[in-house]
Image 1 (cartoon, helix red, strand yellow):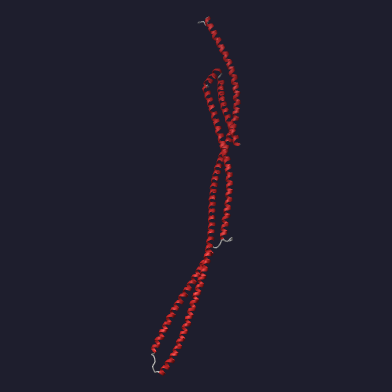
Image 2: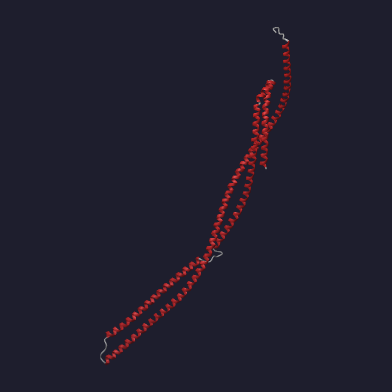
Length: 377
């Protein structure tokens, strides 16, 4: 053993060990060739996946831009929907206001028509009452004229009677003078002059009292006649003014013009209401269509988010599985390959991981494409 020679047993053991090592070497070489082939295949797959990843990244950026455009369009559609909703609320408010205005105008028109009929009825009643008053006034005037004529006739008769009595008194005085002269001449005695003066004064006083009574009656009747004439003129003026206030509605008068104006205004309001109602129906249909499209878009977005979440969970599971086997891959690469090839295997592992991510991105791209098609529809 000191000279370097081995015993037969040691040689046999070494030969067996060498045989086992050679077998292990052959198996390791076969495994190395197999791994080299697999690594080359994986490298080709990785290069193809990198190219596909680049194109997918570009597509993803393009789809992200499209998705951002669609989101902006979605936001603009939401703003339009809000504006349409505000316009709809404003139109509903205007329609309600127009309906209230229409009801108010209808009620005012009905009130005006009823008031016009009431005024016509009142005018007819007042005209009949005025005619009745005029007939009564005519009858009263005739009666007053007759009474005044009678009073005037009585006064004239009294004046004539007074004149006749004065004439008779003068005649009697003359007769008295003649008789007194004869009596003085015949008998030499006569009645005192005071007796005749007192008797004449009494008769004159009686006549004056009767004349005063008749004058007072004439003055009272004249005053009553003036009062009745003034009352008649006042009533006639008041009836004329009142009748002119409640004249019958003229087709060309102010009331007819007001009624025609209210009718035209009501027609214009009805036309405006019909136009606003048709516009409101169109906006309502467009609003429902936009709302339906927005609901479909929300459903598509929810479905795409669910698919993306499921793919991300699958990616997380695969990443966790690869992470668990990373140490085993590194050890195998270092034991079977040189340092440069081990680094290449590590890069291949990273490429495989990126390939998995690219598959997830492809799924996301497909989902986004479906979302884009649904939005275009």
